[in-house]
Length: 417
Image 1 (spheres, rainbow, N blue to C red):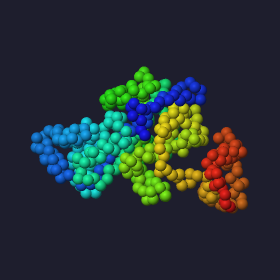
Image 2: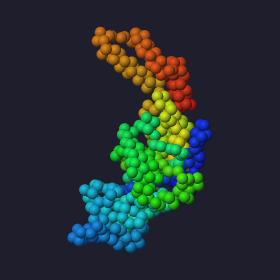
Image 3: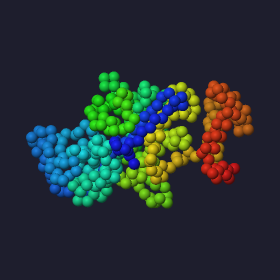
């Protein structure tokens, strides 16, 4: 379960030389966007239509709309689209907010009738059980009976302090993300690295949280940090944040045998049991040094090496993401990620054929037969090994160790020809 401001854990993790230390806080639920499907109450639609028409005639910025007994109190109906975008203004006609949430309504068919996002400060005060109860309570005020309440986007974050920490260079990230952005603002001290910006599936951002608190007025975070044991107000706080969009959440189905044909992460209840899966997808497993993760950060001195180990601060952050997280088995191994002699044999043929094709491009008369191939290939392989400063025996031994770690007890090579 996500840590609240009063219950978050902390720990010091030292690097191999015990010189530097990282203090971690969280993980925190930092963003929760919900889709509500169903038939809206007629009186609610009429109330919003009437007030929106009045706003246009009077030219006001917004109007207070009464909602007796609604959690968070009456709502403020805005005359314009809010800066924090939770819905497409071309498709949603009404944008509103109160002390607990902000939302958008539409009467267009084929879309969620309502989209709702809890304010960040509420996420730090409530756990997922309480947020689920709140979402159901809100539905009762807007819908006759909602067909479903679906998680559209969720963000998890770990905050940390590390002496003299700076956002790493691009060369020190190892990631499967396709896009990369770096934004440094000297005026407000903001420094952020973003991976897969605007992706419909998964994004990540590493940034100076202290600078963002100051720039965007998130003063409530000071109260959160002051309650966390180990917090040092003389050091800036940095944040590693993962954002999971609907495109990814819908793909995470349970394996066969566990609620067969079960849809992806739909409800908050689904989310509660899948936090470990989502964080494992992002940072990998501690057992294998957090390799195989969607992203990891490595020490600058390991540049140019294969299988670069994670940096000390990243080990601490990744471990905190995985702490006390349930696993439901929604994340499965990607095809080919397990050791397979058959797969490697197939890829060997493909690479050998491509190598022979390269030789033929250089010399059209080249016609290397399969029996001649080893002798043609050997000089090129020796050169590559020399450039890497290694030997064939050392590379084979390294790969053997990696396979040994991944092999199942019954052996994946059994029966291979």
